[in-house]
Image 1: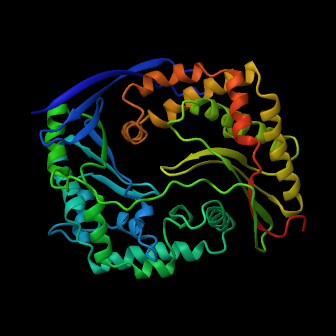
Image 2 (image 1 turned 30 degrees about the vertical axis):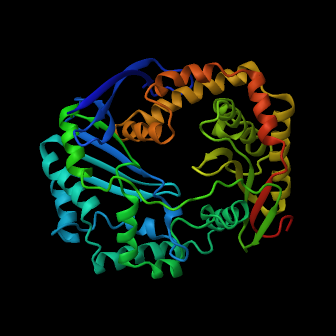
Length: 438
């Protein structure tokens, strides 16, 4: 029996970012297939296309065995390299012949896939997806080819300041935790990964109970239900995942990596906030005002426009399943790195001490409401990804409709309180480049 529940959600779909955009309704259906597989669906017959985004929650690179870092990422590059009785070359040829877009990726916390097909070819397309997930070949030639491609990238980045800064940042902020390990692994750990390792990972980590799906396009709930069972119905009922501990980021440390390059790369870590915190949007707007707003942020104004210290500067809220932190970042001449750090920290302290004003907060609210529509709701795959994100974060199908009201409700006092909560800690500062001041 097919179960369908429909929720009318409102999303801003205009490309105008400066002010809140006009709203257009999106009907999100909660679909449960005859086999019990759940998905969120937005029917859209504008074009004869079906787009799907799916993720296996918790099946990310934190599942890589010790000494085999990069295993999940390697597998993500191999699932479309042959499956069932179709070898790599023939599988890729079929994808091209029938206009099927199929790709996979592994983040720290999740293993995901993107899929798109024209309706006329959906029988072949969904069967190729089924084969990729359930019967990957993992033949020697594509395994070695994809492994070599990843290794080439790792070697090329060995002296890249941004890569070295990110590695030093992870080691310093998350010592002895899976988040400290590179998602792509190292040359040594990649060479240790076997086909049996990848098959064992797929067998235990791809399951129905950690599967999250979002679908957009010219397909109704009944037809989608059948496709869900065809593609995912043979997966195990329950995933067997390792236990990844929650971790607090290390704050108050300094780390410098000496590198003979013209600029010093700077990354600063502060406490963060989990996505399910009721004060999340106060933090989100506070970060936008500080450094998330690119050309409108205080850091951009003070570091780039007024002082010319750097070309780019910003800040982010980062929320993993097992950790949350805030970071600021820039790159500047080594002899001005110390000054840049001082300016960034001064702006943090000012925002914590003085808060924001009504005009600045109103502009931040207008931007983040409009930007959400363009970044998340302007394409079929974008909407499908948003549907998956809503489920991964446990936000509920009413989230898009509720989001603008939640943003509008944030007050100046709440932004100041959040700045005081997150920005007053002694930060961790990681630098890569010449010694600061030289």
